[in-house]
Amino acid sequence: MSEIRQFLQHATQLMQRVEALLPAPPEAPDFTAHSFRWRGDGRDGQLEAVRRPHRLALDDLLCIEHQRRVIEHNTRQFLAGRTANNVLLWGSRGTGKSSLIKAIFTAYAEQGLRLIEIDKDDLVALPYLIEAIDGREERFILYCDDLSFEASESSYKTLKAVLDGSISAAPDNVLIYATSNRRHLLPEFQHENQDARMIDGEIHLGDSSEEKISLSDRFGLWLSFYPFSQEQYLRVVHHWLARLSESQGSTAPLAEAETIEREALQWALTRGSRSGRTAWQFARDWAGRLHNA
Image 1 (cartoon, rainbow, N blue to C red):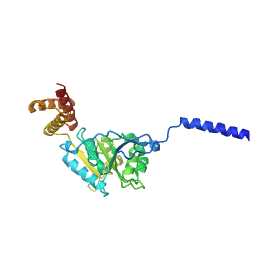
Image 2: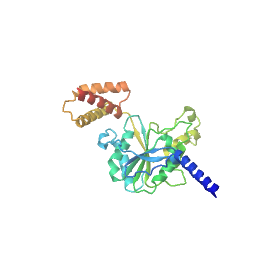
Image 3: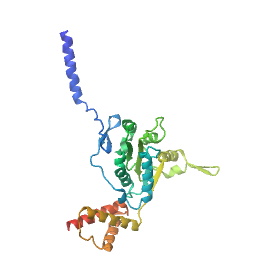
Protein backbone atom coordinates (compact mmCIF):
# COMPACT_ATOMS: atom_id res chain seq x y z
CA MET A 1 0.00 0.00 0.00
CA SER A 2 2.87 2.35 0.77
CA GLU A 3 4.15 1.86 -2.78
CA ILE A 4 0.74 2.80 -4.19
CA ARG A 5 0.57 5.92 -2.01
CA GLN A 6 4.07 6.88 -3.10
CA PHE A 7 3.15 6.36 -6.75
CA LEU A 8 0.01 8.51 -6.42
CA GLN A 9 2.03 11.23 -4.66
CA HIS A 10 4.59 11.33 -7.47
CA ALA A 11 1.82 11.32 -10.10
CA THR A 12 0.12 14.25 -8.38
CA GLN A 13 3.36 16.22 -8.25
CA LEU A 14 3.99 15.49 -11.92
CA MET A 15 0.50 16.67 -12.88
CA GLN A 16 1.00 19.89 -10.92
CA ARG A 17 4.24 20.59 -12.78
CA VAL A 18 2.61 19.92 -16.14
CA GLU A 19 -0.34 22.19 -15.29
CA ALA A 20 2.09 24.99 -14.43
CA LEU A 21 3.48 24.80 -17.96
CA LEU A 22 0.07 24.90 -19.65
CA PRO A 23 -1.43 28.25 -20.68
CA ALA A 24 -4.04 29.64 -18.34
CA PRO A 25 -7.64 29.08 -19.41
CA PRO A 26 -9.16 32.10 -21.17
CA GLU A 27 -10.88 34.60 -18.93
CA ALA A 28 -14.60 35.12 -19.26
CA PRO A 29 -15.36 38.19 -21.42
CA ASP A 30 -16.12 41.39 -19.56
CA PHE A 31 -19.43 42.24 -21.16
CA THR A 32 -19.69 45.50 -19.22
CA ALA A 33 -17.34 46.87 -21.90
CA HIS A 34 -18.76 48.18 -25.18
CA SER A 35 -16.03 47.18 -27.64
CA PHE A 36 -13.81 44.13 -27.99
CA ARG A 37 -11.08 42.47 -30.02
CA TRP A 38 -10.89 38.77 -30.75
CA ARG A 39 -7.47 37.54 -29.65
CA GLY A 40 -5.94 34.16 -30.26
CA ASP A 41 -6.50 31.30 -32.63
CA GLY A 42 -9.52 29.10 -33.07
CA ARG A 43 -11.36 27.85 -30.00
CA ASP A 44 -8.48 29.02 -27.78
CA GLY A 45 -9.19 32.65 -28.68
CA GLN A 46 -11.01 35.05 -26.42
CA LEU A 47 -12.79 38.39 -26.42
CA GLU A 48 -10.57 41.14 -25.05
CA ALA A 49 -12.26 44.35 -23.92
CA VAL A 50 -11.05 47.59 -25.53
CA ARG A 51 -10.86 50.17 -22.78
CA ARG A 52 -10.15 53.17 -25.00
CA PRO A 53 -12.19 52.76 -28.19
CA HIS A 54 -11.65 55.23 -31.02
CA ARG A 55 -14.66 57.55 -30.71
CA LEU A 56 -15.92 59.40 -33.77
CA ALA A 57 -19.04 61.54 -34.21
CA LEU A 58 -21.31 61.01 -37.18
CA ASP A 59 -21.48 64.77 -37.72
CA ASP A 60 -17.73 64.80 -38.38
CA LEU A 61 -18.12 62.56 -41.44
CA LEU A 62 -18.73 64.81 -44.39
CA CYS A 63 -19.46 64.05 -48.05
CA ILE A 64 -20.72 60.52 -47.37
CA GLU A 65 -24.26 61.46 -46.35
CA HIS A 66 -25.96 58.75 -48.44
CA GLN A 67 -23.79 55.97 -47.03
CA ARG A 68 -24.42 57.28 -43.52
CA ARG A 69 -28.20 57.26 -43.98
CA VAL A 70 -28.22 53.70 -45.30
CA ILE A 71 -26.03 52.19 -42.59
CA GLU A 72 -27.81 54.11 -39.83
CA HIS A 73 -31.18 52.81 -41.04
CA ASN A 74 -29.82 49.25 -41.12
CA THR A 75 -28.28 49.57 -37.65
CA ARG A 76 -31.46 50.99 -36.11
CA GLN A 77 -33.43 48.07 -37.53
CA PHE A 78 -30.89 45.71 -35.97
CA LEU A 79 -31.09 47.39 -32.56
CA ALA A 80 -34.89 47.28 -32.65
CA GLY A 81 -34.78 43.51 -33.10
CA ARG A 82 -35.98 43.65 -36.69
CA THR A 83 -34.31 42.03 -39.68
CA ALA A 84 -31.19 43.75 -41.00
CA ASN A 85 -28.33 43.02 -43.40
CA ASN A 86 -24.62 42.39 -43.20
CA VAL A 87 -22.81 45.31 -44.82
CA LEU A 88 -19.79 45.57 -47.12
CA LEU A 89 -18.29 49.05 -47.37
CA TRP A 90 -15.95 49.13 -50.34
CA GLY A 91 -14.12 51.71 -52.41
CA SER A 92 -11.27 54.19 -52.44
CA ARG A 93 -8.86 54.38 -49.55
CA GLY A 94 -9.30 57.06 -46.93
CA THR A 95 -12.89 57.93 -47.86
CA GLY A 96 -14.51 57.11 -44.51
CA LYS A 97 -15.37 53.40 -44.60
CA SER A 98 -13.82 52.45 -41.27
CA SER A 99 -14.63 55.81 -39.72
CA LEU A 100 -18.31 55.36 -40.52
CA ILE A 101 -18.46 52.03 -38.66
CA LYS A 102 -16.67 53.53 -35.64
CA ALA A 103 -19.02 56.53 -35.66
CA ILE A 104 -22.08 54.27 -35.85
CA PHE A 105 -20.78 52.40 -32.83
CA THR A 106 -20.16 55.66 -30.94
CA ALA A 107 -23.66 56.90 -31.71
CA TYR A 108 -25.50 53.73 -30.67
CA ALA A 109 -23.33 52.13 -27.97
CA GLU A 110 -25.63 53.40 -25.21
CA GLN A 111 -28.57 51.70 -26.94
CA GLY A 112 -26.98 48.27 -26.61
CA LEU A 113 -24.75 48.17 -29.68
CA ARG A 114 -21.42 46.40 -29.18
CA LEU A 115 -18.45 46.29 -31.55
CA ILE A 116 -16.08 43.33 -31.94
CA GLU A 117 -13.01 43.77 -34.14
CA ILE A 118 -11.73 40.58 -35.74
CA ASP A 119 -8.68 40.35 -37.96
CA LYS A 120 -8.89 38.66 -41.33
CA ASP A 121 -6.41 36.01 -40.20
CA ASP A 122 -8.73 35.04 -37.34
CA LEU A 123 -11.83 34.50 -39.46
CA VAL A 124 -11.41 30.74 -39.07
CA ALA A 125 -12.50 31.35 -35.46
CA LEU A 126 -15.81 32.98 -36.44
CA PRO A 127 -17.94 30.00 -35.39
CA TYR A 128 -16.32 30.01 -31.92
CA LEU A 129 -16.69 33.78 -31.58
CA ILE A 130 -20.36 33.66 -32.54
CA GLU A 131 -20.91 30.81 -30.10
CA ALA A 132 -19.48 33.00 -27.30
CA ILE A 133 -22.06 35.78 -27.84
CA ASP A 134 -25.06 33.79 -29.03
CA GLY A 135 -28.11 34.41 -26.87
CA ARG A 136 -26.88 37.57 -25.17
CA GLU A 137 -29.19 40.58 -25.04
CA GLU A 138 -26.63 42.95 -26.53
CA ARG A 139 -26.48 43.47 -30.29
CA PHE A 140 -23.02 42.80 -31.75
CA ILE A 141 -21.39 44.17 -34.89
CA LEU A 142 -18.44 42.03 -36.00
CA TYR A 143 -16.07 44.51 -37.62
CA CYS A 144 -13.43 43.36 -40.10
CA ASP A 145 -11.33 46.18 -41.55
CA ASP A 146 -9.51 46.11 -44.89
CA LEU A 147 -10.95 42.74 -45.80
CA SER A 148 -9.48 41.07 -48.87
CA PHE A 149 -8.06 37.69 -49.72
CA GLU A 150 -5.36 36.36 -51.96
CA ALA A 151 -6.13 33.56 -54.38
CA SER A 152 -4.21 31.05 -52.25
CA GLU A 153 -6.15 31.79 -49.04
CA SER A 154 -9.08 29.66 -48.01
CA SER A 155 -10.23 31.38 -44.80
CA TYR A 156 -12.81 33.30 -46.82
CA LYS A 157 -14.84 30.09 -46.98
CA THR A 158 -15.52 30.32 -43.25
CA LEU A 159 -16.81 33.85 -43.77
CA LYS A 160 -19.02 32.68 -46.63
CA ALA A 161 -20.56 30.00 -44.45
CA VAL A 162 -21.28 32.41 -41.60
CA LEU A 163 -22.79 35.01 -43.92
CA ASP A 164 -25.07 32.59 -45.68
CA GLY A 165 -24.44 28.95 -46.38
CA SER A 166 -23.99 27.05 -43.15
CA ILE A 167 -26.70 24.69 -41.94
CA SER A 168 -26.52 26.65 -38.65
CA ALA A 169 -28.55 29.85 -38.66
CA ALA A 170 -26.70 33.01 -37.66
CA PRO A 171 -27.81 34.44 -34.28
CA ASP A 172 -30.24 37.34 -34.38
CA ASN A 173 -27.90 39.48 -32.29
CA VAL A 174 -24.95 39.44 -34.72
CA LEU A 175 -24.19 41.33 -37.95
CA ILE A 176 -20.95 41.64 -39.92
CA TYR A 177 -19.75 45.05 -41.13
CA ALA A 178 -16.62 44.78 -43.29
CA THR A 179 -14.55 47.30 -45.23
CA SER A 180 -12.47 46.65 -48.32
CA ASN A 181 -10.83 48.36 -51.25
CA ARG A 182 -12.08 45.51 -53.44
CA ARG A 183 -15.71 45.05 -54.34
CA HIS A 184 -15.35 41.28 -54.77
CA LEU A 185 -12.77 40.84 -51.98
CA LEU A 186 -10.66 38.45 -54.07
CA PRO A 187 -8.16 39.27 -56.86
CA GLU A 188 -9.61 39.09 -60.36
CA PHE A 189 -7.51 38.12 -63.35
CA GLN A 190 -7.93 38.83 -67.04
CA HIS A 191 -7.84 35.17 -68.05
CA GLU A 192 -10.89 34.49 -65.89
CA ASN A 193 -13.01 36.69 -68.14
CA GLN A 194 -12.16 34.38 -71.02
CA ASP A 195 -14.13 31.64 -69.29
CA ALA A 196 -17.36 33.61 -69.67
CA ARG A 197 -19.87 32.18 -72.13
CA MET A 198 -22.75 33.64 -74.11
CA ILE A 199 -25.88 31.48 -73.85
CA ASP A 200 -29.10 32.66 -75.50
CA GLY A 201 -27.85 36.23 -75.43
CA GLU A 202 -26.95 36.11 -71.72
CA ILE A 203 -23.45 36.29 -70.26
CA HIS A 204 -22.59 33.39 -67.95
CA LEU A 205 -19.43 33.86 -65.92
CA GLY A 206 -16.85 31.12 -65.50
CA ASP A 207 -16.54 29.10 -62.31
CA SER A 208 -13.63 31.18 -60.96
CA SER A 209 -15.48 34.47 -61.39
CA GLU A 210 -18.67 33.02 -59.88
CA GLU A 211 -16.73 31.83 -56.83
CA LYS A 212 -15.21 35.26 -56.24
CA ILE A 213 -18.45 37.16 -56.73
CA SER A 214 -20.34 34.77 -54.45
CA LEU A 215 -18.47 35.99 -51.36
CA SER A 216 -19.33 39.68 -51.61
CA ASP A 217 -22.80 38.76 -52.89
CA ARG A 218 -23.60 37.33 -49.46
CA PHE A 219 -23.46 40.79 -47.92
CA GLY A 220 -27.00 42.14 -48.10
CA LEU A 221 -25.87 45.76 -48.41
CA TRP A 222 -23.04 47.19 -50.50
CA LEU A 223 -22.00 50.78 -49.82
CA SER A 224 -19.64 52.35 -52.36
CA PHE A 225 -17.10 55.07 -51.51
CA TYR A 226 -15.46 57.26 -54.15
CA PRO A 227 -12.53 59.74 -54.25
CA PHE A 228 -13.41 63.25 -53.10
CA SER A 229 -13.61 66.14 -55.49
CA GLN A 230 -11.41 69.15 -54.76
CA GLU A 231 -14.38 71.01 -53.33
CA GLN A 232 -15.28 68.13 -51.01
CA TYR A 233 -11.68 67.73 -49.90
CA LEU A 234 -11.34 71.39 -48.97
CA ARG A 235 -14.66 71.30 -47.15
CA VAL A 236 -13.37 68.49 -44.95
CA VAL A 237 -10.08 70.33 -44.37
CA HIS A 238 -11.90 73.42 -43.05
CA HIS A 239 -14.16 71.27 -40.89
CA TRP A 240 -11.28 69.49 -39.17
CA LEU A 241 -9.26 72.67 -38.72
CA ALA A 242 -12.22 74.23 -36.92
CA ARG A 243 -12.67 71.12 -34.75
CA LEU A 244 -8.98 70.92 -33.82
CA SER A 245 -8.74 74.63 -33.11
CA GLU A 246 -11.73 74.32 -30.79
CA SER A 247 -10.35 71.23 -29.00
CA GLN A 248 -6.97 72.91 -28.44
CA GLY A 249 -8.58 76.07 -27.12
CA SER A 250 -6.78 78.18 -29.70
CA THR A 251 -8.07 81.70 -30.29
CA ALA A 252 -5.47 82.60 -32.91
CA PRO A 253 -6.73 82.96 -36.49
CA LEU A 254 -5.98 79.89 -38.57
CA ALA A 255 -4.82 81.91 -41.60
CA GLU A 256 -6.43 83.22 -44.74
CA ALA A 257 -8.67 80.63 -46.37
CA GLU A 258 -6.75 81.00 -49.62
CA THR A 259 -3.46 80.18 -47.89
CA ILE A 260 -4.93 77.16 -46.12
CA GLU A 261 -6.46 75.79 -49.29
CA ARG A 262 -3.27 76.24 -51.29
CA GLU A 263 -1.28 74.38 -48.63
CA ALA A 264 -3.96 71.69 -48.32
CA LEU A 265 -3.95 71.03 -52.06
CA GLN A 266 -0.18 70.84 -52.08
CA TRP A 267 -0.36 68.35 -49.21
CA ALA A 268 -2.85 66.22 -51.15
CA LEU A 269 -0.64 66.35 -54.23
CA THR A 270 2.32 64.93 -52.32
CA ARG A 271 0.11 62.15 -50.96
CA GLY A 272 -1.50 61.38 -54.31
CA SER A 273 -4.95 61.41 -52.73
CA ARG A 274 -7.79 63.83 -52.03
CA SER A 275 -9.65 62.00 -49.29
CA GLY A 276 -11.07 62.51 -45.83
CA ARG A 277 -8.02 60.82 -44.32
CA THR A 278 -5.65 63.15 -46.19
CA ALA A 279 -7.69 66.16 -45.08
CA TRP A 280 -7.55 64.97 -41.47
CA GLN A 281 -3.79 64.46 -41.63
CA PHE A 282 -3.23 67.91 -43.12
CA ALA A 283 -5.46 69.51 -40.49
CA ARG A 284 -3.52 67.82 -37.68
CA ASP A 285 -0.23 69.05 -39.11
CA TRP A 286 -1.47 72.60 -39.70
CA ALA A 287 -3.21 72.95 -36.33
CA GLY A 288 -0.19 71.48 -34.55
CA ARG A 289 2.20 73.95 -36.16
CA LEU A 290 -0.15 76.82 -35.39
CA HIS A 291 -0.55 75.74 -31.77
CA ASN A 292 3.25 75.59 -31.29
CA ALA A 293 3.84 78.94 -32.97
